[in-house]
Image (cartoon, rainbow, N blue to C red):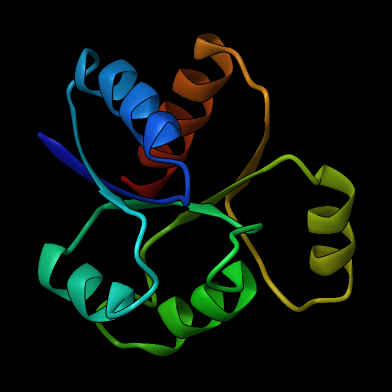
Length: 124
């Protein structure tokens, strides 16, 4: 089973995405707490990270930078999940981050599965 970490401040959103992905062969671990996310990710060793950029207690960009700076997580593909697609596009254009994909809330089950499956298959 492929391991996915989902960093999101809304537990209901984590539950929804987890149910969908579990039905399609993924094991999902959700993180709502900002403290020690990176250390816990290094222990989990996910094959994919879903990351919400807009969270009240932590800056998603800071989390992204930390993920990419750590040896244990730097090569893990990241899919940004955000209601702010323009913000993500601007950040990518400026070269601040390079993500494998972006899902804009609200998204469909089909969009979620297509994006996750595509990124996972590109990873090998």
